[in-house]
Image 1 (tube, helix red, strand yellow):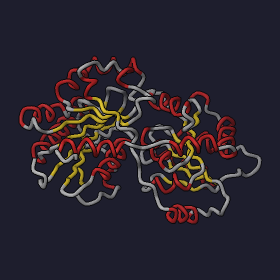
Image 2 (cartoon, rainbow, N blue to C red):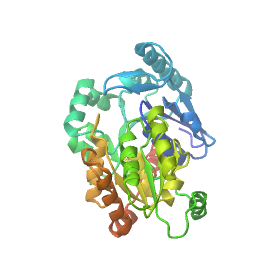
Image 3 (cartoon, helix red, strand yellow):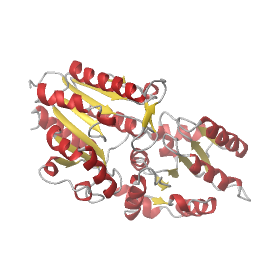
Image 4 (cartoon, rainbow, N blue to C red):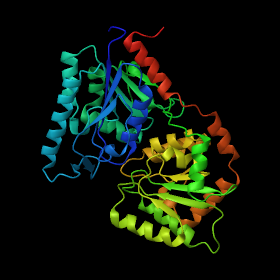
Length: 399
């Protein structure tokens, strides 16, 4: 490839539930921008249009699907048969790949796409554009080992990794969690694996953080706890426990609170949260466009411990108390356990969540944060730097 030619990167993100996939794709895309690089994101996220995209980045929206179980998906908005919706998605994906002619394709999380929807496009690339690099980007932890191995065997993923992918980028540290070992990724596929490290996020200026604190009426010395449940589809139990903790306190808490339910929390549940929060004088949002600012302003963030949320929190140097879901996947629980061993977070198991337990954990973190701050200060986010080096090599530009 000529040094001055345009380099097209296509990113596929199936986005059936929550905010994690589109946020990760956008974080990567924004940092891979360079002169004469175009990035197009294929996404099923219903809220992709709420985010601002810089010049040279755009997105193609495919019809949204919602996960009912690990294997069952239904159209999110349009009232048509699920098979027809998937056929539309598959057609758009394949047509986009053929028209955009990418030199690099990054598939997020699902090697075959939702219900194998990306497979025809990958097979076309192998036949018609063999010079295109096809990357599978995996978060640090998919699920518990046995479940992941069984799912990959049943879907033929191991074969696809060998036949259709150039490399596998794991967005994590091998010493934290090693999917090669845990998921039985054997030779020669394991030679394609590159551990990039965790993906950094935007760090706001001190002035921006100060403005957030002023906006929420925080005075010097005030403590702030932010509670977020990501997309919010299954986050009501966390919000309920937090509000019950505040409601049961005989005296006002020693900290201020901000609640962010997420745009996918059912409206009936969101209304309950809003009514209780307003009665307590607590500010609530259902969607916050620049999460990094409110995370940086917080002393502790209570979250469910999704990959992207933890990266965003830790990148701000903020402590996190994780309440990980354990169904339908255990990845949040495994990540919480892993990060706790390295003093990067603390966590409460889902079944142990009570208002009293939540209060005890929060007060301890607010009163004695040093061990966590020290560990977070030593934590390095190398994901984008590693990806950029790989792309330079693909383009023949690495010195």
